[in-house]
Image (cartoon, rainbow, N blue to C red):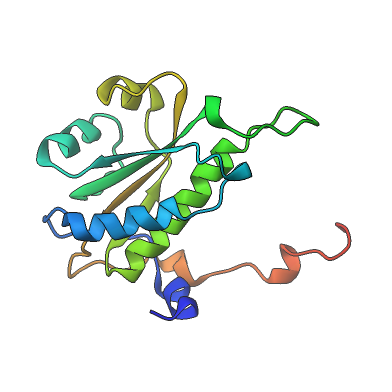
Length: 173
């Protein structure tokens, strides 16, 4: 798919067909995340693939925003493998994980897979439910699957602030 068309047509899908994603399709989506840039190429991302009925049932105990998706990717970062900015100690790994998630979200669209970025989840419940180590921090949940026939973008989807309000050259006004 042409990139500009892909980014224009992608929207947060909240209605899915029941079938789990085939491994071949998941592998393409995960490969896109693997190619994402990370601070000093340390690759601190950790991705939990949830693609079974049992896993999805567990997921439902951690978030109400699963939208009945048959598959989910929990994108995390390993805090101990992060590049650290020397000026203030900021970690690059949370940003790295977000870049990885974005790559996978766009790859899903390219494969005809609907996806919704979810941040409304209980990190402690995720950690307990899926045995996530303390050094690994959940950042984003990508719920995904083939869009249902009634899937459509929300009304606000096509509304954007003018770039003059969000982009500044040579300093903020």
